[in-house]
Amino acid sequence: MQTKPEIKIVPVFDQASNPAIWSEFARIEMLCRTTEYNYAQQENIAQNIINGFKRVWEQKDNIAFAAYDGQKMVGFAKCHSTEDPCEIYFSDLYVNPQYKGLGIGKRLLEQRERASGIFYSYISLLALNEKVASYFVKRGFNNYDNRYMTKKLPERVIGVVPVFKPLAKLRAKIKVKYDKAIVNQCKNCPVFVYVNDKFEIDGVAVETPDKEVKIWVNESKRGMVDFYKKMLLNAINNVR
Image (cartoon, rainbow, N blue to C red):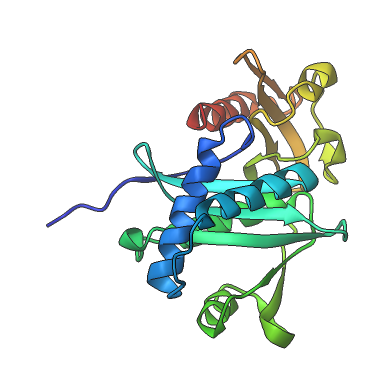
């Protein structure tokens, strides 16, 4: 009996520093387009897809997660900001057809919603077809005219969450004293927060451009300090 692969889901913070990420996104998208949606392959389509990723990266706030089987990317999910400060648009969810049935898409969706929920109130998307629309209806989306769909994001997120925007923009109340100068220089670097059950920030962890890990936690939560540090360090190490 063949064992299931151990799939790792990680946030993708700085897409521009590693253009190979976009190439991998494009490879998986093209594979899904041809096998799942019967799209015909076209000349230069991969470069057109990559150019689209680049434009969105330059013009919007981005949230992205990738699924890996070892060193091989097998799926990804991407969102970007809109003109509505309360809305995030869900632009992409693709999983290598060879890995379907392993719950990878569900895990990507869950991580994306956790990361989106600390900044945005709801998420929207435009389904490619009725099959895709049905998939998202089962996952809590409301289907409106022409397959435009929306979903209210969770109001409570507990645990470690990756941060894709400046920490100062978080609508949660920050309960931990951290070095703002260090965090501000970490744009597009791994940044994580620990969110408690009151939607407050009790911990902050960053990996600086020099690959140094910095962690700050709410020292008043004496029984939780070591736990916060461990969870935040694990999150940083997971993306290194």
